[in-house]
Image 1 (spheres, rainbow, N blue to C red):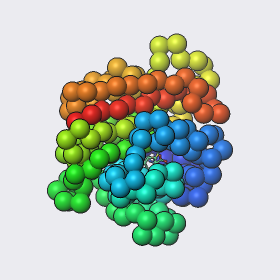
Image 2 (cartoon, rainbow, N blue to C red):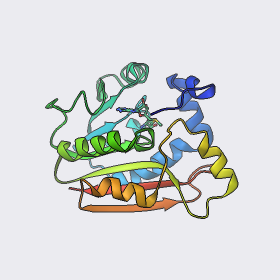
Image 3 (cartoon, helix red, strand yellow):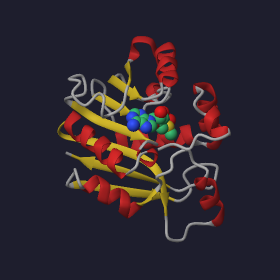
Length: 205
Ligand SMILES: C[S@@+](CC[C@H](N)C(=O)[O-])C[C@H]1O[C@@H](n2cnc3c(N)ncnc32)[C@H](O)[C@@H]1O
């Protein structure tokens, strides 16, 4: 579920979303996660769940990129910006569950997505990723994360996130663990210019 008041509604506009991510360091963080955790190789098939305007595409090597998002403005923007460098599809992991394009992937990413989904939809999303992956393929997720010694400012900033389902590291591990047996997690207490805490999950099939 998403929170859609005030500024949050403006963030559905692709340019504003991207500008905000540049300003707060969210895009630099994504770039780092792509290098350290996604670790894509040229020729890999990559599925990006909740791809937004696919601003991360230029930071990947020459891969076969397939992005999906429920927001048609983001998908239209991705098509305008990247043309045939990728395939961009409007839909979610339920409506696209039986779409045969979402199979045999080397890596599935969901950057900033799970914290938008309640437990049922998040489990569905993780299962979609599992089914879309080749044997030994990996799901990489990046999300906001509550920690026991959460500072006042990060708690305040994170409480305004559009995603209404920020979880603890343990809760993310439990969600992913319903589907994947190999789950690793890395918490970062200073990932961006703003007070915010993130977790990266790497789940191997
Ligand atoms: C915080 S944005 C992240 C966008 C992009 N992955 C990034 O890293 O900038 C979350 C995205 O998830 C999309 N989204 C939310 N629920 C979704 C769902 N059920 N299926 C597909 N996309 C979803 C939203 O439309 C939005 O583009």
